Length: 433
Image 1 (spheres, rainbow, N blue to C red):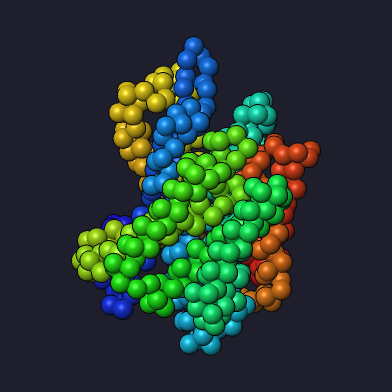
Image 2: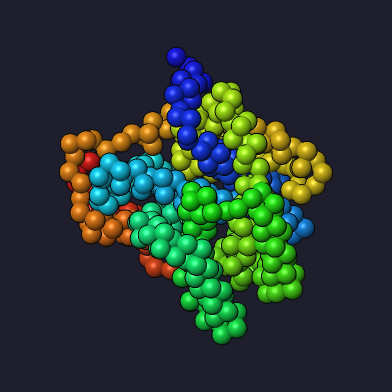
């Protein structure tokens, strides 16, 4: 049976009361992120030298594109909706916090561990082959960029039951509390130069966005006209923050030296999320009707069945393909980034990478669909949380510095050890369950 036939069979069994637009937005947001990453990474081969680059830095006039391609807020909103549905289901079935958390962590961490183990092996092989340390560090850091999202999302999953109760008790007041905390951290960041406080916005910004998913699940978002009005207000706020305030234009990375909307997150990401979400939710009705058709829904089911694998491995595929082109004498990499010829070649570049990513996703995606054995012991909440925090710290350090980087000697070894030990403590490695 073909993969499409399997997805079609699954799609046909979908309950009618499922909000298919949630799954559609999850799939689209990840595909947009992948396309954005493939687009902004540039490599220029001239006279035997390969110069890696970043389109947003080399072509600053393209930074406005990030207002379209930075859709991680949508993914967190969808995550809030999904976590609310999952918590409600667990409550009906009598599943406690430990059982609920174990199932959620298994789905998120299993495909992540495979990527980290693979890149550990790749880094070791590159080192034994005499590859320059800076090359190992650069390629591994690039390939592990997608993992930063999982580090913070895992922490939100841990907090999701408490956050959902917070929402149920206070409603939109809970959302505005997180917005206010985000604003206060930004004021401390810019006005008082207390930049260390800005790092707490990894919680406040994404918790606020995550709460919008709770509001969506609760049917508290109002009419399409209200959503469009909220989107317009958010766009105006974002415009003023960027063009009249201290925030940079780009919503991805750090193309502006020493200042970024994402490192750490700023209130601009909240405004961007509300702007995008308001527009997308205004079309929920017609999109849900369109998704009742089997073909579009089957495509959505197919993408969601391998979504974590596709997301985690898309940059690795690009790095490996780029390395092959470099070893082939820079074939295809001799077009200067930002030129008309380069832009015209991007559809071909992205199409090739999609073709290369497809078999990787088909091969590795069964891991993310696997579930814990019903007879395996469920670790205590304290053990799961402790292990997950260690895991997230290790992931964050590897995503920030890669293998061979960091301010301390062999920080990569310590970071990888944190991931492995954290996975063991939380019961995510088979022998520790």
